[in-house]
Image 1 (cartoon, rainbow, N blue to C red):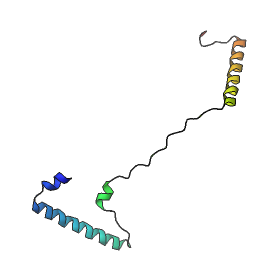
Image 2 (cartoon, rainbow, N blue to C red; image 1 turned 30 degrees about the vertical axis):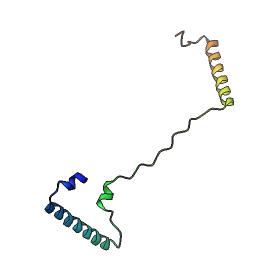
Image 3 (spheres, rainbow, N blue to C red; image 1 turned 45 degrees about the vertical axis):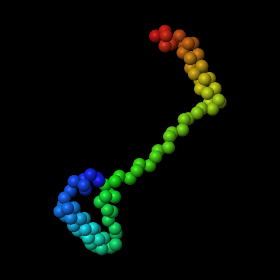
Amino acid sequence: MHNLFASLTVAQLEQAAAIKERIEALERDLAAVLGGATVAAPAAAAVAPAPTPVPPKRKRRISKAGRERLSAIAAARWARVKAKGGHTLKGS
């Protein structure tokens, strides 16, 4: 942005300043019409708000008792499959 102003002529800078003053006056008029509500400056509106940081998800851990329950369920399931003579992954 600094280089942009350096390349402008004095007449262009004066015109830009006049336009900025008109915008500010119009914003004041608008605030008066809206009952004192302020209007954000264009430069502030152009900048997007920083996103809120998302906390990392915690790793879910299973208790020892939970692992034992799942192991017992899996063993029972495989026992039923083998008792029926069903297919296993290697046997299919």
